[in-house]
Length: 381
Ligand SMILES: *[C@@H]1O[C@H](CO)[C@@H](O)[C@H](O)[C@H]1NC(C)=O
Ligand SMILES: *[C@@H]1O[C@H](CO)[C@@H](O)[C@H](O)[C@H]1NC(C)=O
Ligand SMILES: *[C@@H]1O[C@H](CO)[C@@H](O)[C@H](O)[C@H]1NC(C)=O
Ligand SMILES: *[C@@H]1O[C@H](CO)[C@@H](O)[C@H](O)[C@H]1NC(C)=O
Ligand SMILES: *[C@@H]1O[C@H](CO)[C@@H](O)[C@H](O)[C@H]1NC(C)=O
Image 1 (cartoon, rainbow, N blue to C red):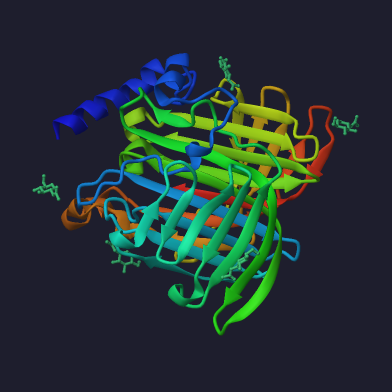
Image 2 (image 1 turned 180 degrees about the vertical axis):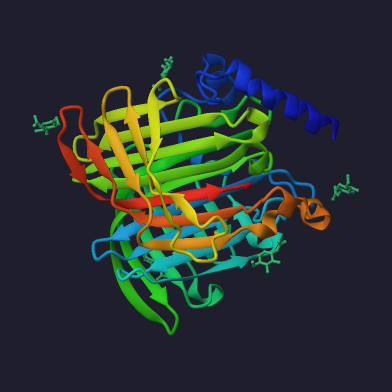
């Protein structure tokens, strides 16, 4: 508890000390302490980064995420988690397959602690027979979801990077190295995806398209650090866009953390790599009705527009089609629901994912439109 109090004080300091970087650890000393280099990425950065700790009190979490869109519009999201929900020590494998018509099917399975094994020198997250594995540094990955343990849903996909990895500075958000943090590493900003996916009944289909893989981890319940975030990615005429707009928790004074990455997958040129409100301006589009009638707040922002200091504008629209809408109320700490404080404070953690049709506007006004995904993750309210 004393440690927690210390952390809270540290978090409060984020808003005061670190406002220009918006909580992103980006000092030379931060790189040194974390063993990271600027604009250079090491294979172990995608290996397991948190200690393997068993027990109800483990504070670590980590996941490897992939999403891909096939040429025919089929979308697949596949992820492997070390512990989900937070604090359970139960590894999770999750898969969602959305048809070109917009219908999502899939499975989310909790496994036992002993079913998980984790590589630290490269990505090799294995849970039961399911895995998320690097087979060639940060360039090639093999993703396997075993239909026998996942209600008949499966994938066997190869992801080959078209761009080198990326992170905003050290990718660590917090106040100092060793304090509470949330970290992010975009191992594959964009790559080519080939392989197969399986539907119940053993129906196997081929998949060929564009994909993305990132990796998140941390040492404290994310809701302590973050209130909500928008995150989106897409591709337009060979240009890759990754954007996020994080809002810190009440403890950080709702600190805003925008970031934007734009790169050319053909020439490999990075056009934008910026973070912080000094560099990236964000505007939310007027609210629309949330397509899920059970969504507690009825309306949601119609999209997010990111303008970089270099004049590039990325616009990610929300709304249609809806890929996923999940009530996360099981993550509400029991103490809040028992005392009724969750109702009083109107706490409704929720996860929404849309297919998006993002646009990229060049400083000279030329505008490209493409395809992508956009998520709104409400950790607290
Ligand atoms: C978890 O924490 C509780 C409360 O501090 C303690 O009683 C318990 O022994 C801990 N469990 C483990 C496995 O460390
Ligand atoms: C998965 O795909 C790889 C590469 O195409 C292939 O070598 C492997 O046999 C496949 N695995 C299964 C279980 O089908
Ligand atoms: C963001 O803005 C700050 C303050 O103007 C600047 O020092 C920093 O280099 C910028 N960083 C990036 C990655 O754009
Ligand atoms: C979560 O939401 C479901 C569906 O609205 C409801 O039945 C359940 O009681 C809620 N649980 C908590 C802990 O609020
Ligand atoms: C704007 O810039 C892009 C990228 O350099 C270029 O491809 C395009 O032709 C330019 N458009 C105009 C109208 O100059």
